[in-house]
Image (cartoon, rainbow, N blue to C red; front, side, top):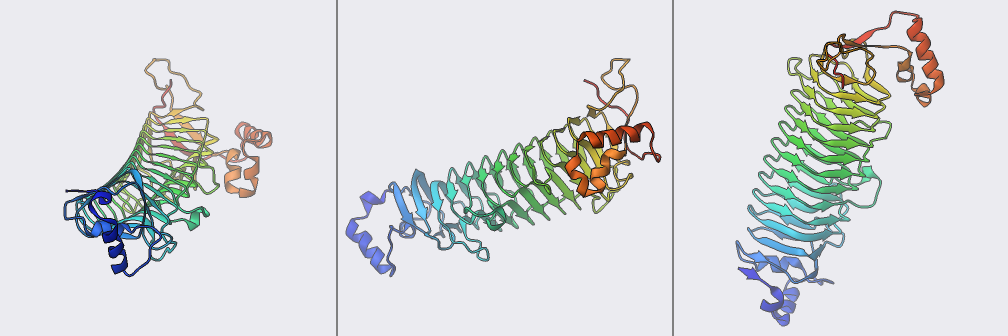
Length: 407
């Protein structure tokens, strides 16, 4: 059943409904239209602006066609979806409340099997809030937060105890983070996250797929905390230039698969420490690290990870370690190193000798933060050359790639 309220509700009846509601509105309230839409019905309001907040408690479809705006006027969550199987499409959701405690958002999804697509959410503290909601599709929405410092905004996507959701093709611009907490088996595909604090943070969220997203001009990229079996594939992560920033950070997480990503012009490309269970290694394969200050940083980890077929190009430092053993016990094989000076006499595409990396004076800026200003300077380069020609002590071997690739 399609409801076009400009035709089906006389103006006097609408006025009576407003008076019965006991509240004066500067705009017609969308809640009244929702309430008289039957279960399974399709609501297509006439183009214009409507008052929120509004709550959907029965399965309906709302079609906004990009011409319908819901304005919460600074009060609460703009639209709350509590009914399984509902469809929210083509709405503009604006002006949520500003309470972090209440998680005032553009849209709250607390139902299963809903579709939320092609909506615009702006000037709302949090964007999309998903609470104990499973098997939903959240696609092609554009989300931005309030105009505050990144730490004072809300998450563009906040997901809590939710599984089996598809987050695809959305744009999150000027939000705080995308946060998944205790949420497993979700797919986050082809989204753009930029001009925010953090791309994505996963906490106790296992077996999620993060694929072909674009993350740029944030403080940090992807952060995995005690989240196992996460697949990070085909993402483009670039221009993370804050001094504390990293493209991918893995802490206490096992069985991560990090493949086919492009990590460009970041302070640190990958930060990794030991998984909770040493036998649960992760795989790092076919990634490109280019123009980063540090491509990879290993600290306090036991090794054993598979690091195959990656490219290291024009990084200030390819691998940084907290101690000489931090990266040595990883399985390095088939990686391309632009600093490799060997030959390929048998023309098999790989160097005849292993690529060995040692610690020389060029890591002085790592051990003494005050020298960071001189990274790449002639003075530090001269010191490094002297150290390599006549080392004051035996340099430590931090990794050996047994089969370095040659273009």
